[in-house]
Image (cartoon, rainbow, N blue to C red; front, side, top):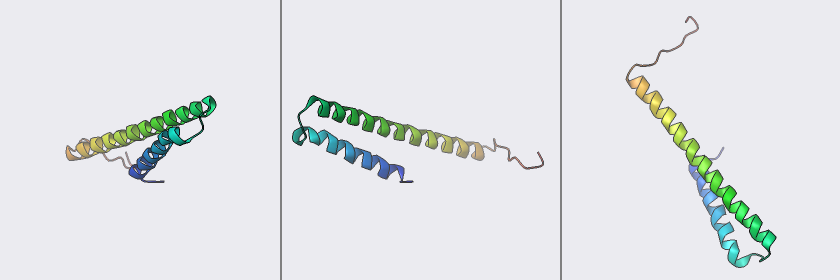
Length: 79
């Protein structure tokens, strides 16, 4: 799987290209509607990526804090 930063950069690049197609692409209403839908979909993918990264960061920070405070119990097969 691609690194989160490179995935986000790829999404930004794709978004930039779709936005610039307004100047050079076809002028039909159907094409414009598809272009707008693509822009929204790219925005949603970028938002999902940032939410996932912030959740992963929060879980990682919680685990580190718990380990530092000895708030965790290690589960063993005996317990």
